[in-house]
Image (tube, rainbow, N blue to C red; front, side):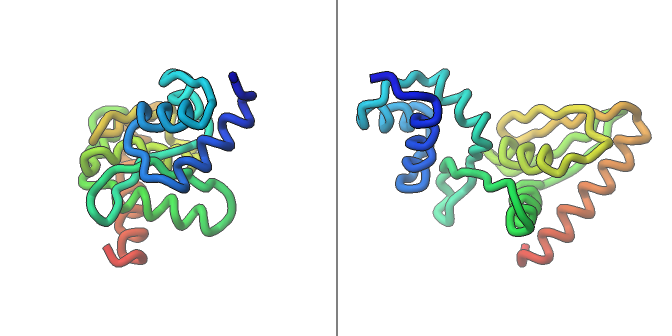
Length: 160
């Protein structure tokens, strides 16, 4: 049975809250086992649309979790995710290059995008690197300093 989009996304959120899911294939398998016909491509779109990110557990395993995006508590969580992900920040022309822990660039970029900073023209994340484009080199310098402060402040509030 092909579920509606809202049913599928609700079940997807339930699965990642109830289980340790480390890959999109695991998530698709779990949903298919529950009688929901889904493809990896559909899962990928849902993950992006729902703001689901990968975070490291205490044991170092990367797992999917929903990113809560509303309210003050969410803002604090976003800052914590960004601070914990960042290893180094560099500026090159109109780009800010944010190096992260392995596997944390997507989470860091999601947190960064949620900050809605006016200097940011766009961003793209790989495994351990986020490229953030600004409209001008001066904005990149300003943004680089700002992100460094955010990472330090959020990190010190969270004991990192």
